[in-house]
Image (cartoon, rainbow, N blue to C red; front, side, top):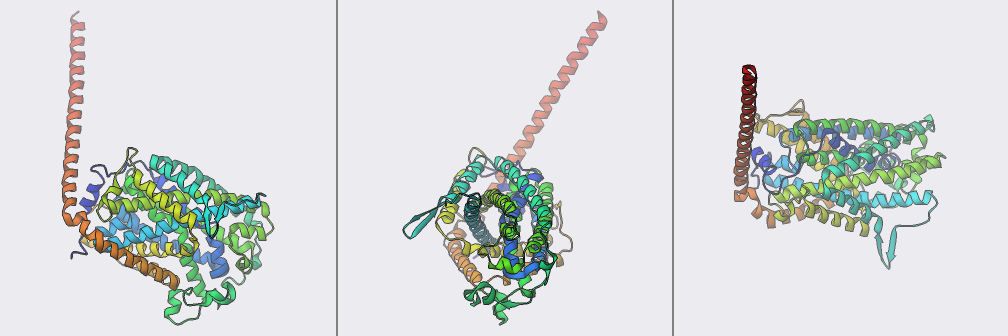
Length: 539
């Protein structure tokens, strides 16, 4: 079996230009930057920071954000190098398919499906939770949940998922414009939160900056002292489950990595970018810088307003909780509204990312080919609707919060393999033009891969068990269906590449003929004008 067969870069690019499986390029650098910021600001800035401070690192959650931001920023620069060479849908899946081989690409694609399905479902559910909190703060004692005996159905996630699914079916550009408007509003609210929060800061809340380690059961309750909820690295090294201290900073960094989720989605959308070799690296860089600065400032405010011990006593600590505990209930109302607005755009970008990964795998034959058909709006409409229905069902009918860590491990595994692939592609195809290059190859990409894997080891044992089960299911699908239907194995990709080259040649020929025709018309017009001038002189 040829498990490590690779797709050439030329084959990957040919897929983006032929038939009814190509996407429309209409996104600029700002659209891409906004996508990354939209997920990062909504997914974590209003809640993850408070949880990292309360249950992991205390005031040192500021350092957790810095560690996660630096590692993620370095990793997405690896994405940017690949996207500048291979601006095709699929992100890490497509990049590894052209370097390491098909079976590794399948693992990455399968991980990305896990990451974005869980993230989309978790965020949709959280949107409902925060919508109910906002209604409560505004004096409305209503709930979006409907109880039918033992079964609970929440209609709020269904509404938000359906709205953005329709927008994405109508066109990625329309969705990006709505996303941009909401994101600008979110950034404005974050600036407001930081400015107001500084007036409530008490320097004593920063002491101790790195709290001493404590048994996990003392802070999180008796159930947290078991093996399953312990970071894998602690379990492997025989340590007792603890929170805070240096290990708490690292586990906090692993938790807040969820906050930087949006930037691999940006690479996934590179096939829809105008001038992707310039706009994708630029969009990722601008968005990442904005997010790191905002997260650091919000972490400073959150841990300075309220003691991390008080946050730990709250059921679901968030930024709004911090303002409530500080006595600024009016600000908590504004923040609750901001969370509701913020999470809507996250849902949209994650729906887009999940669809594009499945689209790329389907186009290669690893999933049923019918999923990659593009509709009249230039989007995979049927697939987008199917993804929307799946996310809506999971988020409306199940308790998805227990699966949130699955998002992090899926993201980190993809980041690790993409970083390793950079020096491999440099050695394999040094001839390819790269408008962006991450410096220090091969050592910097290798260090990035090690750092990402290190964060993976700080996720819980239960998360790793679920991850391994997901991978086993994926291998069953690959060997049962995908390997036999892969277009790379059947030779169809070569035929598609030849067709793309013929279409490109025909287009170039038509352009030349059109230019010659226009030139001929201009010459006739010039000749006619010269003849008129000559006759007028004779007259």
